[in-house]
Length: 122
Image 1 (cartoon, rainbow, N blue to C red):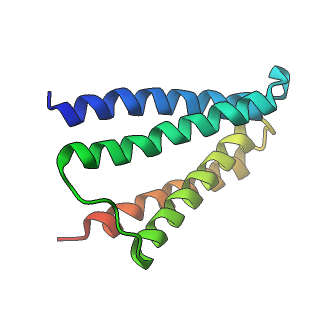
Image 2 (cartoon, rainbow, N blue to C red; image 1 turned 180 degrees about the vertical axis):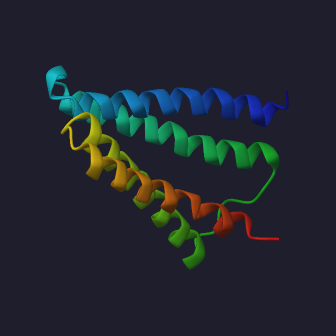
Image 3 (cartoon, one colour; image 1 turned 45 degrees about the horizontal axis):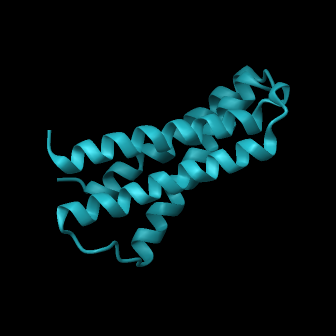
């Protein structure tokens, strides 16, 4: 296993777990841990963002240049993730099955649009 893959594996796992746990703490009212969940989620996001910079540094690539295309891809990724998460909440928390499935599918389609935007169609 290459060094950058191992570092990405560790940072991605830790960041993903912290982010997911933080979101559960925020969204589940039974836990009564909204503020702590918010802090945990932000720490998870920071670890995931650090993973991006560390991986590029290990690979010897230049930092990510922010242009309109990159910002658009980031916005689409965030919106797609939020829409998918809203669909999951509709199903699991508010028990609105049909609407939740529909919203979740829209979120999945938004996330699938990222593939041709980032990799292109050959």
